[in-house]
Image 1 (cartoon, one colour):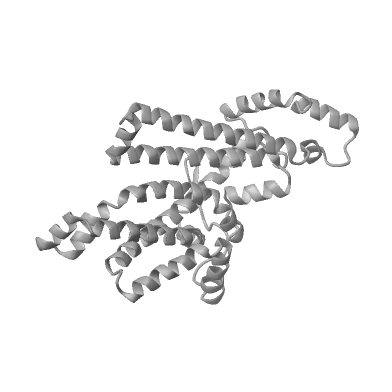
Image 2 (cartoon, helix red, strand yellow; image 1 turned 180 degrees about the vertical axis):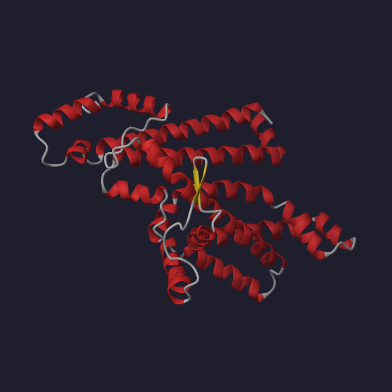
Length: 325
């Protein structure tokens, strides 16, 4: 892999994290009053002044930012105003729930979207294939919370098959609390996972269909068919394999989006993850938690995109040539 390409992508990632850190810091500095959040509105002026001095809020903004950045590099996001505990501990408690939800949604989106895209491409001249793509537009267009409410109405309220809220029973493996190893935990994942995945299913299906239509017109596909290779083998082995590069890119970006946009789904299903924590912190002006959430999501987003860029470069030699140029 070309080293200049790696360095270029790494520098972009560092720049993005830096910009997000500035935005998160400014958000924490200009939104709400941390002194009031900690002491309440009835605190004496002396107590308020003492706390402002202890938190360094009277220092120049640049000095406050440098101090904030130094703490973030060591994993110190400060103390939660509401929980009165280190923010990093509060965040880490919620990470497993959100990661499991995002991973489930990714499995749904790829497991359903890729076969749908292949089938729609192979049978693109048929009317039901066009209808499938039209339905996928509906899937992209519907807000996630609307999908979530419909799912609850059908599968929880009407049919009573799946729980409408909560994470179910969980077990602890080391420092990781998981619901993937219990029946109620798995059942609780299905509705929020599918609600979060529905727009991504449509996106993946449309992307795979477009790429497959291009590949199916290629000479080597025609040659494979002329040699008498079965259609399923041509479609799923030869053609699908050559559509995977954009799928790799989208999947990596998807994971970041799923993590960031799990906020709405977690609220609808009362899922005890980062999104629920973020909304709670926002309503209570718990700014250390809000800024830490932004930094964690941004770092995760940047990391997944960085991995995708590296995989993309490994899979497509033209990128290496482009980097040299």
